[in-house]
Amino acid sequence: MTGRITKGVKDFFDVLVESGGEYKNKTVACNSKGVFRKDSIKLKPLVGDIADIEINQGQRDKAELWGIITGIHERKNTLIRPPLANMDVLFIVTSVKHPPPSYFFIDKLTVAAIENEITPVIIINKTDLDPSDDEIFNTYSKTGFRTIKTSAVVGTTGFDEIKDAMRGVVCAFAGASGAGKSSVLNRLFGSLDLDVGELSGKIERGRHTTRTVELFRHELGGYAADTPGFGALEFENDDKNNCILEENLILNFPDFEKYAAGCKYGGCTHIKEEGCGVIEAVASGEAAKSRHESYIAIYEALKIVNKKKKAGK
Ligand code: GDP
Ligand code: ZN
Image 1 (cartoon, rainbow, N blue to C red):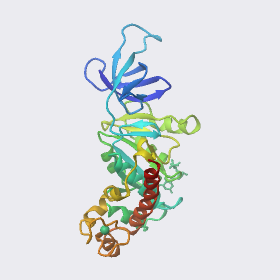
Image 2: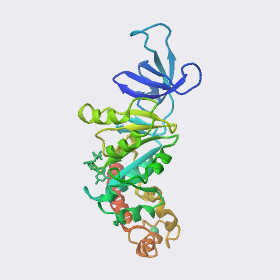
Image 3: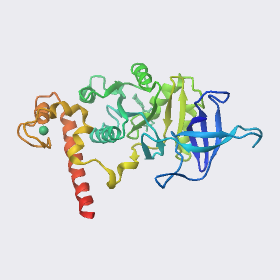
Image 4: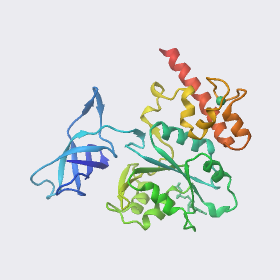
């Protein structure tokens, strides 16, 4: 029987059964059967994992449904902080002001998401504070990333679109502290019928207690991660042994790829070359200047890391 790990505390995990049969949609409290090895690497079950479980006959802890995790399915991606596996969609929440948006922070998150096969969706919140300010919206509309305007306090628009992006997938919310992640989540889940738990209550509790990650299945046939206190993300492949090569960075900027096809010289870094399609698109206003600035900053940072890595070998 297989299910999704929705919660983990030490060696105890909640697994929501997804496969058919009498246990379908039931949450089973599971122990993990020791260490999972793949290529002799220790593998600890993570929230978001798809797990094989065996249900135990008999009673334990007053007839609680319980079982043992016997295996973990291959992961699409692994987050170290917050600890979470198999994310499909990352909502990046920013505010138009208070706090001001950090384009660089957003772009770093989109690069990391794309590297890990996660679809970034940009949520521009607090639009009520300056309804005429479309700068950040225009910037991200140009990227091709889904870009959604909201106001978690007074508005009603955008929430259906967010829900649409949540359908049938595992998603999480990231963004600077104060941008309105909790407010957006509360708005979303205040009106949603959650299958498991009550998200709004959990968020409030999470802030005052330990930083644990939980997945909540919602009525749109997907899961949302409640990740209190995590503004940024750290992926397993963030370490310098396994990071993006600067010459491949353009692949993490899907908005630039089509312009890069028009570069005059092969091996163009798209930083300052003459006849660079990307630089021309930025100059004409077709591509976003701030995105290009982020590209250059990330490129230079990767260059240093990769050089050190080579020297270390
Ligand atoms: P988080 O740190 O990203 O989870 O941000 P919160 O959801 O805690 O929001 C931070 C502050 O911004 C709170 O005082 C919210 O009431 C306020 N806030 C959140 N969304 C909006 C919005 O759309 N408009 C306005 N004016 N304030 C908002
Ligand atoms: Zn170029």
